[in-house]
Length: 172
Image 1: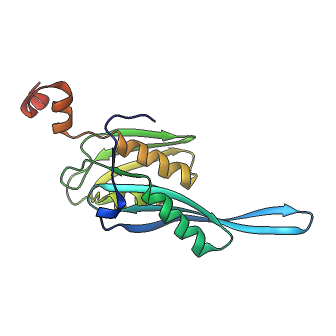
Image 2: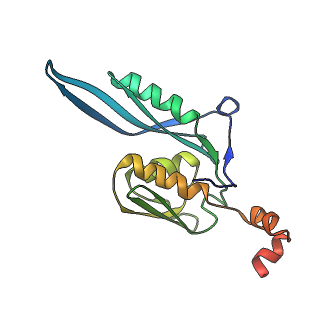
Image 3: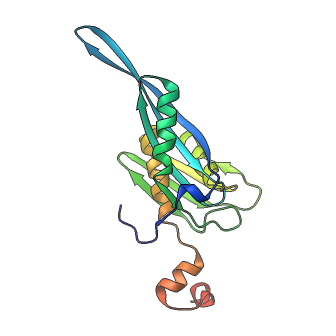
């Protein structure tokens, strides 16, 4: 999705932690027998507003994971966070996966399932209410969550876009 507020980040200037979301064994059947390979969905983030996702495929698990991490480092985005939660409600979608993010009060924790939880923890969200609807395919849920996070804007960004002060955004 073309979105003007996605800020690309260079992976060299930050300390990134990686999380393995899903690993899948894929079988290719040929006349010579079965050939196994692995695909790994990986999420990387610095737990303070930067996150990225990647997919790695290889004949061995460790190689697939390292390829996924390298791919994730090429797809980093900056996400605005407000006191450990998201600034506003947001929907995201990718393929058949639909996700919904809602800000939560301090102390709530990350209320999210599987693939969404990995992305939200990597970006540094500590309190959020999240729901995954539609497809539960981990790769698509990760992409839908990244889509939702990339659409988030904080009050300063909204004020700048509208050409007004931050107070005017809230008191309208």
